[in-house]
Amino acid sequence: MKRGPAPARSALKSARVPSIQSRAARQCERILDAAEMCFIQSGFHGASMAHIATTAGMSPGLIYRYFDSKSAIVKAIIERHIESDQCQKIGQLNSAADVTRGILEVFECWRRGDDPKLNPVLLLELSAEATRDAQIAHAVRSKDRVIGEEITEAVRRSARLAGITLTAADARSRAVVLQCLFEGLAIRLVRDPTLRRRTLQPALEKTITELLS
Image (cartoon, rainbow, N blue to C red; front, top):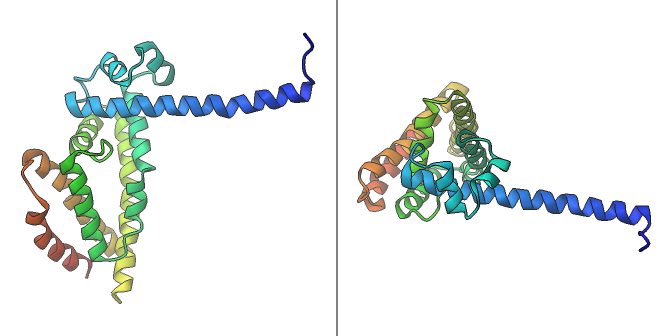
């Protein structure tokens, strides 16, 4: 059987590379989705690699082809969160009303549990594991810096639109308070799953308006 011309074989080989990379990316996403579900249901230490593999519908050996440990999976989850739409949306907030609405929308996602990437239990699990694993701590802090910069810029932009000039230190200070408020809601919801938006909204609107004015 005659082989095709060398250029044709080369083009075929080049076409296969993106296909292989795409399949690997899909497999990684599948593993990360499964891991997030397991961490939410069983906690970091309760979720074994075998449990993650079963949830992903693949063998543990296949998972180890992509991630050599649970810590590697956690770091990949954190990186994925940094690149998520929510981080991008934070940077687009332009006013106190936007900030309030954004926080309440995330709160509703947390409460309904309809998006594993926006789950208060997962947030707390990742934070807790960062106290035990230096590499995960580094990844968590990197994520925190990215989000902090986005929120600081949103605070500065909101103030400018209101005719207020903030120093860099003032903008950063207010951004930190917003982060504390946001993360505190995650803890509060885990402790009190009956908490509802209507309870939060009036005081939240007032607090954020005063904070950003």
